[in-house]
Image (cartoon, rainbow, N blue to C red):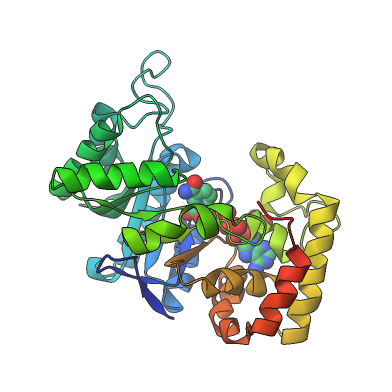
Length: 327
Ligand SMILES: NC(=O)c1ccc[n+]([C@@H]2O[C@H](COP(=O)([O-])OP(=O)(O)OC[C@H]3O[C@@H](n4cnc5c(N)ncnc54)[C@H](OP(=O)(O)O)[C@@H]3O)[C@@H](O)[C@H]2O)c1
């Protein structure tokens, strides 16, 4: 495994990490969840990603139970969680507990997450989306307090605009508060603009790290959706039907088939090539992988060994395959 600094922070994260979205609580029970984390850890993964909203809190419960059983030294792994959407409302329509980054919500949400995870602190707490209805200053002060109270070691954002990240950073700087150190954006061969263009200045100017998600575009970049939705895939889940338009897009699947030919040429799988391409970007601190079975973890972790094969010639072939189809 390779370990990269999380932007300018001192924290080092495995270049490949592991996340629980969709899988934990929807596809996997506690023992399967534990097995996948153990398989990832065996390959050197030290970063495990979660969010309170995943399976309505169940994902944190499963990860917490698995961590307890695994008994790893707390110093040796990083756990993250994220706040914004909230859980099913406890009162009325959840006026202060859904779709918000207000101070009241954030400071109680972290306690609830820590209880589900059975941890004293998370390593990174993310604001899962921007909240246009809460002043940036209020959110920055609340995230600072979460860190100052020892409930999170660092804080960051997910899918924020560069302007909002910069705004939050300057508020923190002005008031000597803990600054956001990391952004968690989608990044894969079909989705590149934010990481490559919008955030470009932030890497040098504020030392932003990135923990990127959906490197396989939910499985599309493995080639498994070429002939329809496989029975045991993410796409077969009822609550994921909204993804079919993208997963089954004939044009996208034709492009993935071409990527598959290139992968064969250089001696790897389509998934490994797609993940290696993300790893090649030096502004990516960690590529958060997802998996529903141990074999996928084994396959995906080998992507690190493929990176040296991404010569300028291979990168040019990838660019030609994807041309302008990416967002
Ligand atoms: N911040 C955010 O807003 C946000 C959003 C999304 C995700 N995330 C984080 O990023 C993590 C990764 O995202 P993701 O799960 O969407 O990643 P992904 O790599 O795009 O998709 C992972 C899924 O693809 C399939 N897969 C993986 N490896 C495979 C292989 N080698 N062969 C065939 N199929 C394979 C598996 O699903 P099936 O086997 O079920 O088909 C797996 O669950 C999440 O767990 C979460 O922690 C964050």
